[in-house]
Image (cartoon, rainbow, N blue to C red; front, side):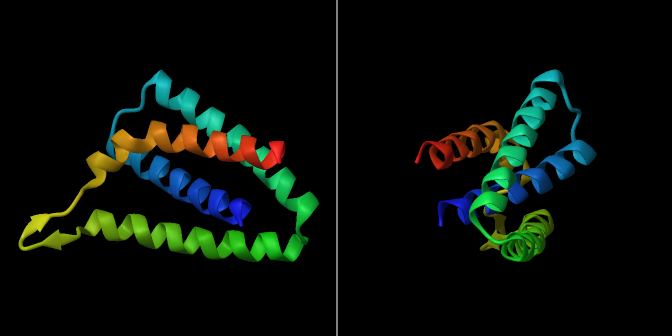
Length: 113
């Protein structure tokens, strides 16, 4: 179950990174974070392909890709409560480093267990 949760967070991170690249200026720290998360993605898929069937990993990856895209699009359009935005993309951009580190920790836990 931890594998699937981490895989979902990975797709959410990369969709958020794609939007961040289009809307904001990217600096070296963010590029390094993207590289770190890309390495974690390779490790996560290596774990997934050795412990689960190929078709299960590919199907779940496709579903998580769609769900992450819809979630980020919903935030871009806006979630409003009584006319005020609940949260915006700026808050998600600020939380991106924490999400990247959290993904790294979860991949580490997967390999440690």
